[in-house]
Image 1 (cartoon, rainbow, N blue to C red):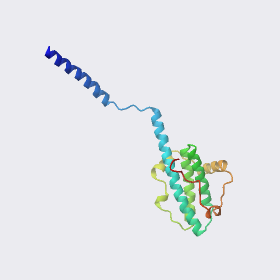
Image 2: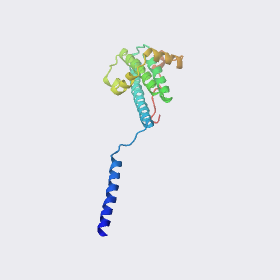
Image 3: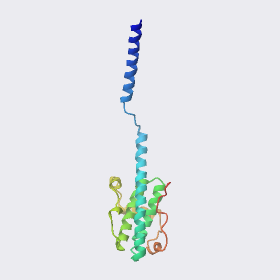
Image 4: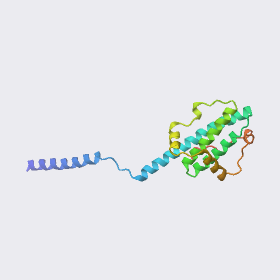
Length: 175
């Protein structure tokens, strides 16, 4: 009887142990909803970073235009595209916001160069952001037409921005 109990306990523990190890060996299942949510979140993170870095470039260009007073209209264009990028970000259109911010940064760099500023490596988009935008290319003409349609009457004069603080171009900490 004693041997029977020992054998029975060994069989029970063996079966329980096999079931436990099989359950541990299987990877967790991922549904499509989680994968989509992760990608959308990554787009939001990338768009936020792109907008914040473009804001930095615009502020540098603003300072250079204010000091050297070479008015090309590029600072005003940069501000308009960046404000529109911010609006798109707030509406959840993260990829489109990144593209508008790309155009804004390009105009800000042109304004900076025209005012004896130097283009440094920290002004460029990082490789991850460039890869995202290159996977979904949009022409600058299309982005300009979109801006003209959605924000008609924006200022194209740098002089309108030189003596005042530029607002509504950055994403806040909780946005």
